[in-house]
Length: 554
Image (cartoon, rainbow, N blue to C red; front, side):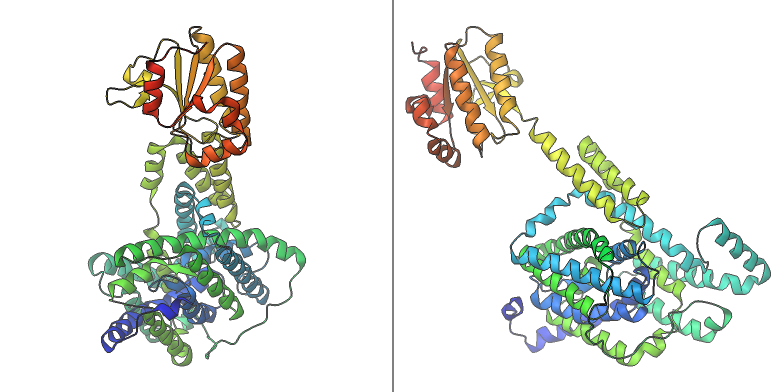
């Protein structure tokens, strides 16, 4: 268990962890309520998701400073996954969120337990760039109605808002005033006073102003009543089989995206602290945290980059900091719910929007496109599909991963195959690039810079046959295997076919610099004896010496 490897706490380290934990806790409390609103869940479930899951995540995860709890992307994916199935805030919605959290957690747990952590790499950087930019836009747009105090962004809702503004200007503009002021204060604090907890200050001012001006009495939406007390463990409610089937693909995508997000935080923390982290153990921790969140009656959680960075900035030394954060959340559930109920929803909307502004990075899409058109297309398609598939956002990731796999296979079917000659430094290099002479007038030397498998074999065979037809003087063909790291049955069959076809045309096949794993496969297939051990060169240098100075064998 990872927590058993934590360093023994000292008075100094506990003091640092307590300060960092309380700092993160004071930010987490209002954020948890805000992300519950983003996920379409009751306010108290945000605090539930910030309590036990954070403890479980830190105890069983590999990164001691990763802050586990409600986050924007996971909350948005929760909202998008459940929107076609129920109405936000209803008992049916909460039940589906519980199942979604359980399914995503179970997927992550088993991926980690069976050491499949690297499967998260299927969500490539272009997919993440496209998805995050689209998700940021969706989050910002989704919070505009709450920020402005209107029912929605449809023409009917806008017309109703204008009628209310004309009938009662002060009352109708009060939500926008609260939301706008909160937005400006949060942006200002983040830009000019980054060391000050702007979220905490805005929360305090929002509650005080709401009570002073009787915001709720003037028709403003507030958080409302929050059930006080520690959450009990709940048994997931019964839902139709069709709903389960709808949740399975959404849970898989959520599990991959949330872990990819957590992985980026773990890497940064490990680099900053010069520590190692285990992606499989982190998957287990993240999975258990999601399962506990569902069992607490809450929604899926993940690792938060911003709160993890705050943890590090505030001087946390171990996972004890998260335990102090959990005490803050517990204190709020026991004693602060009567105050949090007055928090205006426009303030919550501003708290959701401001951190998301930093996720908007269209320059990242331009950079990917400039480096690789194919990867750029993947990013753009992921971005577009995510936007147009609202509320089923996971289809954007599915489309991106599908394109990534297609691009991967396409690239593997277009391997780099070059004719090589002896360079001035004594190595075999690309003849056309360096304008090199052949090793000998009757020698064709070819190098494949890829695995020799079912995707690349046909290309190698075609290249050698074309070069031999183009130069009738060729009597010896050398395949430089220094770039071949792997071979499969198709690759071996291709070499056997090449040997037979070249031999029939009076051309002898040679191989050089065969790596151990490739050699073992060739020996198992008895190709080495079939070709003849004398036609293998241990190194490229030996091939240069053997073929440059020796005439073709009769």
